[in-house]
Length: 166
Image (cartoon, rainbow, N blue to C red; front, side, top):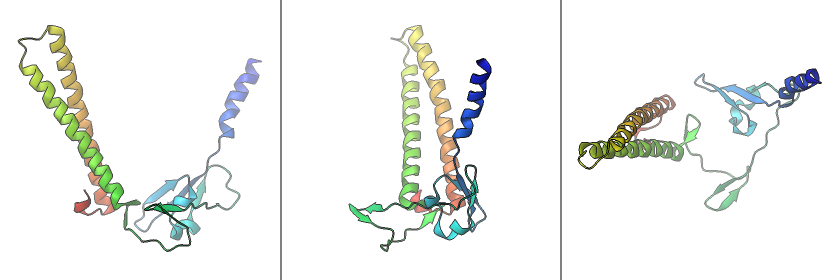
């Protein structure tokens, strides 16, 4: 009975097969996705199927996009927006705004804790120690958020994102 259970548990992951699509863009960057519809049309003929059932040709399922409340079909001409690293301008703006906002909030919280630590006259020892721990935690958080923002800047540089979108 135990052997059967172990055998079933070992074979269970084999039933979850997923297909991953791989292609190389003009810059030589290797890209991966699980949705063939996300592969740019000019690279679909050269896409490699990884994992899953590799015998059949890949199937493309494209959905219609909604722009300003109107549905646009795949056959309707669309306004081409420049893409940087596979992301449009608004996505880059949102990512930079979110990263900067999180960093500013963390720095403000850290400054508040440091300000509270400055006046210890009406504070118990346990409150003081709790503030110290919060300061240490926020210092690490600020460092981590700065690293994430720097990584976003590096990725934006690689993708050729203009400075006004940052």
